[in-house]
Length: 316
Length: 316
Image (cartoon, rainbow over all chains, first blue to last red; front, side):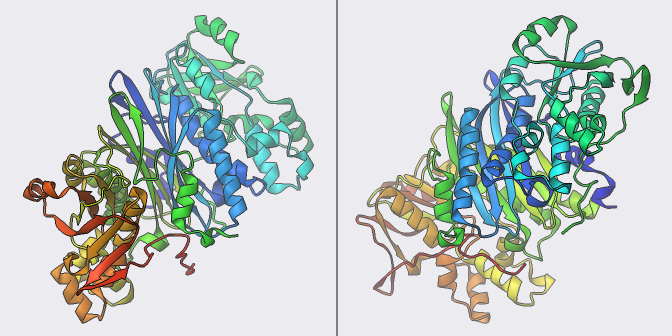
C-alpha cells in the first residue's frame, strides 16, 4: 500500500496521532495562555509560480505559515526559516530575505533565525509560533451558525491556472487576480478580531470545499452554502469569461486563497460586519450533509481540494 | 556573486540579521523564562545514509533539532515536522513516524503536528521549541575557562565515510562507530545539567574546529586545544587503522557527532565530572588565535567544517 492511496488528510492524521488536535496549528498551554505552533513547506515544482519575484517567494513562505496562526485567532510572535536551494545569485538571495523580513515586520512577527542547505530545487520550510488566550478550532461550529469568509474566492486559483497555462504579459501582473496568486496575504488582523466573535474558524488555502468539510465533519454537523453568495471578484469573473473558466468551480475547489472561513451565531453579524467586510455564504445544519444550493437546486459538494499525495505532480 | 562564494555561516548571519543572537537556537523572553526555537532540515542526498532504516530517518530529524536545544541548556517542549517525499510504501512511512514519535517520547518532547508535501527526494524539516530560565550562549566563554566535550569525536564522520565508500556488511552496523553515524543521540540531559555549571556551550555537529572557532570568535577570545586529549573511541581507532584514515583529522573536522562543546571555570570540574563523563580538551586563551598543540608543537586550526553552500554536492 502506497501513501498515494491515502491522501494528505489521512497522512496528517497519522502525523498527528499524539497531537492536541488536528487543527490549523497545534496549541500548547503555557501559563494563562496557549502557544500556537505551525509548520508549512513550499516546494519549487508544486507551489512556486515562475512569475514570482524572489521577494514574493520570501513573502510567500511567511504568509502560508502566518495564515495557520490567523486561523487560530492567534497573534504571531516568531518565524523560523528552513532554506534549501541550489547555488544562486546573491542579489536574488538578498531579495528573498528582504521579502521574508518585510512580511514578518508587517505582521509584527520576530524573524528568529534559520537553517540553510544545498538542495537541487528551491525548498522552503517555515515555522511560526503565536499565542492566544483562546485558540479558535475548526471543530466547534454549532447548528444554526452562519458561515462566512473574509474575502473573494477563486481568484488565486484562476490566477495560478492562467499564469501556468497562458501567456500572461508582465503588464497584466498588477491585476488583483494575479496578485492574489503571486502575493497572497494572511488574515492576521481579521483572525484576531474574529477570535472573540466566532465559534469555529479555519483557513481555506486548500480550497473552500475541503475547509467546509473539515469544519462540518469535525464539528459533527452538516453545512449548506448558497452558490449565488460565493464572493467572486469582478476581475476574476472577467478573466473566467475571457478564458472560458468556471469561476464557481474555482471558488469552490480552487486553492491558494488565504482567506478565513468562520462560523458564528446569527446575532454576532452586526458587530462583525461593522469591523470587517464579511461574506456570509451559508449555515451550519444538523445532520452530516455538506451541500450547496444553486438556483433552488441542492447538490452535494464533491470531496475535493488539494491533497499533496493524491495529486502528485509527475513532471520531474 | 553566488551564494557559494560565502558559505553557510555567512548566509545564516544574513538570515539572522534581526535575530537575538547567532546561536544554536533563537530565544525569546516569555514571562520569567525564555522560549528557545530552532529549525533544521535534512535532505536525502546530503544527510541520509543509504543504510539508515526508516525508523532511524525518523529519529534523525528529531535528533538534529533537539541537539540545538541541548546546546542552549534548554528543556525541549514540542517538535513539529515538515515531511516531503515521493510516493512511498505505507509500512516505511509508518516506521518513519514511529522513529519520530519514539525519539520525541524519549526526550519528553510533545510531537505537535506537521505538514506533508510531495517532493522528488526525501526532505525533512524539523522545528523544536524548548524553554529555559538561562539560555547558554556560544559567546560567553571567558579567558582561562577549560574546554570540554561530552563524548567521543570523529566516530560519526569515520562511520559515514566508510558507510558511503566501503562495502560494510550489515552485521557490522552494530559497531558503535556506525551506530553513531546511523543513529546519533542528542545530549539533552547533559545540556540541562551543564546549564548551571558552564559559561558557554554549542553543539559540534558541524565539526569540532568550526564549533571551537564559533565559541572563541563570538566570545572575543582565543582557544588552545591538546590533540592528545581529543577523545577518540577505541573502535574508531581500529577502523581508522584498518582503512588508513586519520582519526585526528576526523576528530577535528568531522561532522555529525552530536556532542556538546562547553567551557567552564576550572573549579567547576569536580562537580561536572561527578555527574558526567567529561573530556577536557583545552582552554580558552586571551588573544584570538585558535590553535592545537600536538607533541609539543603548536599549529593553527584550519578553518574548516561543514558549510552547505561551500561543499555543494554536484551528484544530482
